[in-house]
Structure formats: C-alpha cells, structure tokens
Length: 229
Image (cartoon, rainbow, N blue to C red; front, top):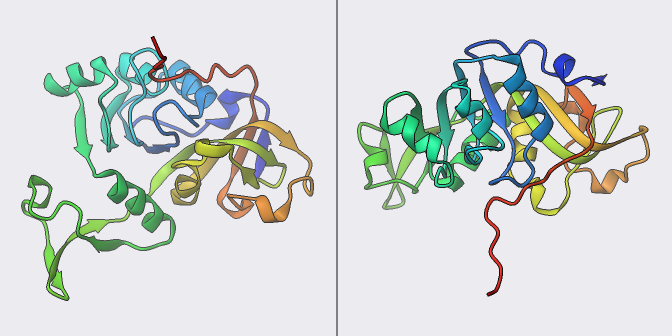
C-alpha cells in the first residue's frame, strides 16, 4: 500500500480505455478530487461503473463534458442533461442495471463470484436473450459479477496501512467497489497513523486498498436541494 501526496501520482497508470468503478450515490461520497484529477489528465474512452453519472457540472458529469467516457454501467441517470444528450445522439454507450443488481454484481466481483441468479429483471426487456432458470418454481436471471481495472473511492478517515472508515451514507457503494478493483485508490478527508482507528469500526480493511491520498477543501455539493416554502 502506498501513500501519495499528489492526485497526479495517485491516479498514475489510468490510461485510455480502462474500466473504472467510482464510488458515491448521487453526489454523496464521491471521490471529488480523484475525478477532478481524471478530468485534468485527459484520459478518455473510459468505461465507468457507478450508481449514477453526477450532474452536468460536478462529479462524473465533468468527465462527460470532456467526452472522456465511452460507456456507463449505472442504475440511475436522471440528473444529467448532458448524459441524456450523449445517449440519445449515440455518443455514449449505456448499460442500465437495477440498483440492487448493480450492487450485487459489484459485491460478487469483489468476492470472486463470476455470476449469480436474481429475480430482478425477469419478464422485462433486461432478460431478452439472457439465461433464465427456474429454482423452486420461480424464474431467475443470470447476472455476471463486475470487476474494474481501478476503483476510485472516498472515505472519511484512513490510516497509513489503508484501513478505511466512511461517514454515514457516504458509505454507499464505496466499500464493495474497494473490493472489486484490481487497484483501489482511496481519497480520505483525514489520514491518521496506523493503530489510531478503532479496529471494530473499520469498514474497509487495508487488504483491499493499494493507494491512499489525503485531500482537503471539499465542496460536498447537494444534488438537489429541497426546502420548505
């Protein structure tokens, strides 16, 4: 496990055409600084696995604006007009996956499980030309596990061995993506010495993390703010 002090070094090796997993749910728990680093690097033709694709001017939406994404594997894409435009024009390939299935495909990939059966999607267009089997009188759809060349995740705290703790709902997709990346890069708000984290409170063990970087000055935008009149 390596500790980095610059985003450029932390994302080194991410080249054109690789597959990335990017943590977050909406704009909660996204690796803001690593995404900005990808935008500035100019890497392109990316396949990205993420719950959604940010908004037009933040998160993964920044990579969309730069035409750096070739394919998205997602479960929700309703907050990004540029996503809609690129998809409808044929510029962006999209694989929509039910949210629970997406989570399980990532978890399975991280656990070394190549495929599994789920009832989600049976009888819908998702099941067309796909294997469906019956267990105990109920039909199930075969889904494959997902792995990535790199996983980019965000944690609240991390230690210098790579153990991670997430803050509340920012936990979302980050832990399972950490286990499903061949190289997992974690950005943390606070990097502490080994031994400072309570072992019983660690969400992602260091075995899954190859690179870590401490970042500051987070914007933490709200995807859609709703207030009373």
